[in-house]
Structures are given as C-alpha cells and as structure tokens.
Length: 558
Image (cartoon, rainbow, N blue to C red; front, side, top):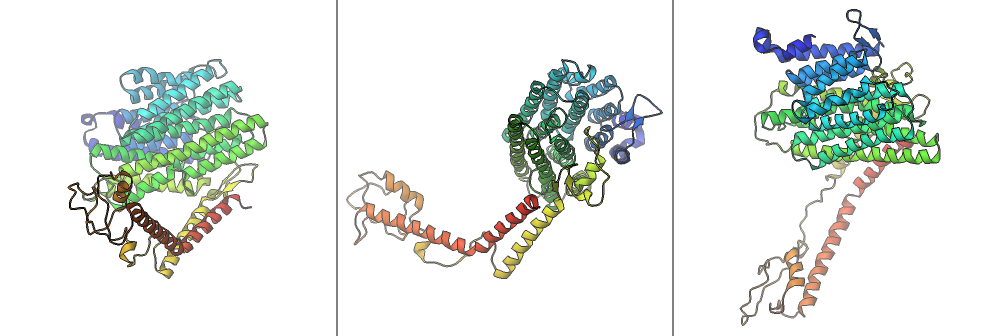
C-alpha cells in the first residue's frame, strides 16, 4: 500500500518527500524483494492474518521477488501502480481477486486504444474452472495477448505482463494436470507463434526499444514452451523442463531487465551513455547473460532443455520421442537466433558517440545491480534453484548443500552442470593464449608485417603504352606507371572491347597471355600468404582445438 501511495500521489501532497520519491520507491521495492526472497527460502506459506484475502504460497513469493526488481526500475506513475497491482494479484488467494488486480495492471500498461480493450481478456482463464472445456482455448488466447503486450511495451515494464502470464499459466496447468495431445499442441503452437513473432521483431526492428521488446517476447514464448512441457505433458523429463523454467526466470530475466532499462534510458536522454569503458563492460555482461554463450545464464537454460529432451526420448514411445526431439531442436534454434538478436542490440547501443562527458556512477547504478545479480544467479545457480524451488509446481528439491549451490542438477538423474568449471576452462584457455603470445612474440590471428618484393604487394608493375594513332581512352581504373588493381584487371579482362588498344609491352605475347600471367602471379601470391599465415598461427589453432576438447570433456565426460 505504501508503494502504491508513493508511486501515485502528486508532488503537492507529498511535499518534501517528493524530492526523494525515487530513492524512497527503490528502498521500498528493495525491502519487498528481500522479504519475498527470505520467505521463499524459509518456505513461508499461509494467509496473512491482517488481511485474509492475501497470502503466500509456493509460486507467489519467488514471483514477487522478480516483480520487485521490475518495480525498482520502472519508477513512479502508472507504471509503478501497475507493478503494485501485479504484486497484489500474485499474493491474492482468490482467482477473482487475482483477475481484478492483474487485469487492472494490464489496462494501465495498455493505455487507450484497442490494446486497452483486448488485454484485460488475458486474465479470463482465472475466472472459469480449470477443468472447463474453454480453459485451454482461453489459455491460448492469454498467451497470444500477453506476448502482444510484451512486444509493444518499452523499458523494464515489458517483463511485467510476462510474469503475469507465466504465473497464471503455471497455476492453471498445475491444477489441470496432464492434457490431451491436441490441447498441448494448441498451447505449444501459441507459445511458438509468440516466440517467432518476437524474433522477427528483434531481427527486423530498427529502433532499440522495439528490438529489445522483441527479444523479451521471444524469451516469454520460450518459457511458455518449457512450462507446457513441464506441467501438461507425459514426458519422462518433465522435471528437467520445470528446472528450465526456473532457470529462465533467474539470471536471464534479471539481465533482460538491465538491457530494457539501458535502452529506455538511452532513448529518454537522447544521448549516448555507453561511451565509458565501465558502462560498456556492464552492458556486455547483461547481454552475455541473456545469450546462450557458455557459461552464462542463457546457456544453463539451453543445457537444461537439452537434458530434458534426452530424458524424454529415453522414457517415451518412438513417435512421442520424435515430437520431443523436434520441440527441443526448435527451442535450441530459438535460443541461437535470440543470441544473434542480442548481437544486434549490442551493436546498436555501442555505436553511441565517444566524445561525451563521463556518466555519473549513480546514473548506471541499476545496470550495476542487474549485471552483478545476474552473474551471481548464473554462476551459482543452486542458490536460485533452492529459493525458487516452488516457482513451478513439482516435487521439492532435496536440502541444498555447498556443492549444490554451484551446480544445476535434477532429482533422480545423473546430469550435472557446473558453470564455474566452464568459466575456469575458458580462463585457462585465455591464459595459455596469453603465455604463447608472450613467449613467441606475436599476436594471434594478426599476420606479422614484413618487407617483400614489389610484385608480391599486388599485381606487377607495368607501363601503359597506348597507340598514338587511336584516340580511344584507356581502360577506366588503370593508371600508367603504377600497380594494376585486381578489380580493374578483372573488369578489363572480360569487358575490354575490340576497339580498345592492347597493352603493348616489348617482348610479350598477346593480351590474353599477359593477363593470364598477371592473374597467375596474383593467385600465387595469395597461396604464399595463406601458407605463411597457417605456419605462423599453427600453435594458436592447436590451442583452440585443445580448448574445444576441454569444454566438450566438461559436458560429456564422466
């Protein structure tokens, strides 16, 4: 209630507090997030004695912690009130109260127009029985509407409808249980449509805000796919897909919040804030945590999905196993293309001007928080898996140990991923590369400059001797007494008309033989350069192969 009041009241009512409104909101959201994480760690459940309409159960407290991160970044006004209403909806014990609060939050996000009319219908599945025949079609409509809401939002507020949609979908699928194949197909198709539409927006968008909103929509669609496989399918690896969803709501979600905040801040200020090396490094960290690069947070999600596909294939019939393989391949493809979209985001943001004054550290404090928090959740995934164990309904994890904090593991399965070991392997490869550079005195992949004969710098030297009796001009692009460029020689070889005089060099044959010698010398020069490069970089290539073998041993070794 205090958060809603501070976010919505005008300045003349708050008087002196209005100057510190931002700091007060951040402090209150921080207290709410820490309280939710503490309650989730200690498995606090039950209704609130002071107001029995609200209460805490399995998924509510971890989701409240994520919404607190969103609220701390969006600030005041309608966006802040929408975050408060979403938090109250998550804590509501009645489906009708949940629909009231979250529907109002979606209306505040949509504003006026057709979105304001359509988005409140996304919460209709909460208002009907879970076993109704209309439940699955309405869930499909909800997935599409929430994906639309994410794609049109700007800034960190885009994660808010995703949290609402995933929370409602997880709750209802947990109540329904296993669905028929057709119903599963409907939900999977809706999630795939949202993911593909988000990828198309991310790969085709020209503005940074629209581009990152497409990335967020694709992330939401991928989690919908994993959530449907975890809760409504009879696959043997359903618990691994459940872990995939929990991991996807951890480090990638926090890093995505940082990227969304950076883009919104950049467009609001209409100036580049990425000209300092510190800010560029932080931006690189949050972009990497969203991608599938090992050992970042997105890679852990991808690894868990691959493990789920493997266990599903082992324990199902051939036809269902084939469908599971196709879905996992589709999921992996989405993750890879999503990483390519993140490269577009980085190139677009890092193209800011360099000659600007330094950004005050307080202006990039949210980026610091998102980068550090996402790195902790990515490299110590066991902490988030323990805290958010009930984010998706399923069998509880065993008591966590110090060793489990650094690994991703599944109950009853032998597969384990330790991101810190992967990070250590990459660090050793970079260290060995640096030692080789110091020992042999050359930089990898950079050919050593050396002086060679003039004819090896390009085409041989020639003289232009046109026929004095013919007024026709020389071939365009050729300059007498200099080097014959490759493109001009190529064009002249195929396009020289008969009226153009030949190059008359004393003691030489016809034009075809002379130009053939030119191209032969150029090809021989390219061959010499390629052989010398391979000889110089042989040790680096061997080292890279050893690094690939090391990483492969970390994943497939026993």
